Length: 568
Image (tube, rainbow, N blue to C red; front, side):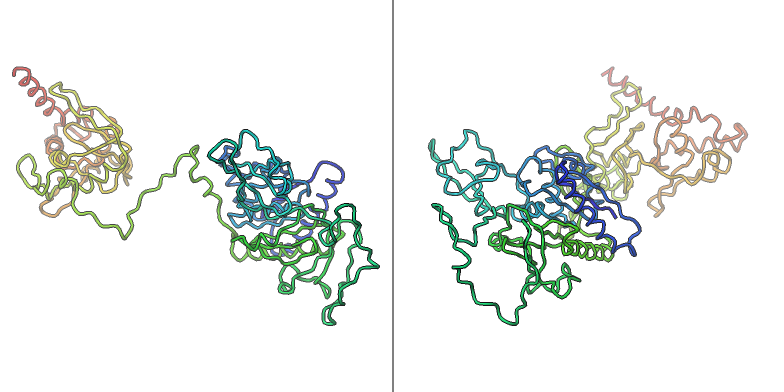
């Protein structure tokens, strides 16, 4: 199991101490998996080093495809950071993209402290990139009219209302100087106001004295009194919601588990009202006077307080998270989905070669290539015979032509007597020429390689021969040299293994050369007669001139035709 721990604190002594508290709490929580997990690999990375796990090609920020594989190997993510870090800051951009990817892939994430605000930002906005114009932390909505708009406005520039968490985008008017700020979304949090529960402090008015304050009626007898009190600065009293008392996050909290203490120094609080309007709502498991403190969204948990050894309840929440997610991983083998979908639309990557499949609902096209070329008239061969029983079906020829090839195979020109040139791709085939020359088009073939022997077109392929080269050259290969059965009698085309081997030696792939070729059969018959008559000892004798014997007659015919053309 691989666990990623993000260090979001500074390099000062206080920051190092805070991270050590958090990391020790995470390692202590994984002790509950000792009986079931063989080994746990902790990868501790600061925020600037998170680029190894982040992939975002939209703005050419992080475009290393290897980051996708590294991110998919992570099982759990634990992150805690300083409360002064904001989701839209430049320093926190890698962390925001990491949480955004984890959000869309349903990864197991535990966020604490300042990272809770970032997770809430991702849930509320989907990880949208914004650039706040009115200061780093925003301002008040009442100051919007007095705000001086910059001359250049980008698509990510917004005006942030820190009190409500709403951000506005500028809508330009038709005339110069006419513009308005339009609400564009909510960041999911707002600045915490320490005087929210007191009266206003305008004009120096002091808050009412506790002695003069009329307190509310004491709680009902059935409601237990809180056994804890927040004494130190930053401490908050967290109360578990009644409907979530038996939630797995608060397992083993004891008799007074409904209320516990936590250290929360955040300046921003989660906004419950904006969460209610969000289609992706998180569940509030526990809250305090400063808003939600423990939230849950699918496989993501977040707490506003820091994980410290001093506060045992914070350690208990982390332990329960590890226990629950580890059981899910053991039962489901893998939680979440791969982030390989992030590569869709990236122009820098090569498209994946996926064969197009015809859906079952699509109509089946009847009629092959010869129907489009010749119409309803059945094409005939050179001798006037019907081509319906030939070994070159038009649909198979169309399949080969649709393989993406662009170069036309060039054949013999005029009467020069030269052999046909070789090409690597095939664009179109003529069924009439293929059938006349006796070359069979395979059912499954590749247009990656093709050659043009004398007088025909054939497709090259790789055929596994069961016999070795020595066996083919030996006398036992004599039995493999047989005359093919006529197709009209229902026989299948047979191929000469020795012919394949000889073609391989001279660089001509004769894989699909049919034995119906009269010239090949004639040369083979003559050699067999020479062996029987004792003229030659072996049929393999004189293989150097084998193809010359096959192509000799055709060259002579080609030369004769060339001379006739010249005389004309």
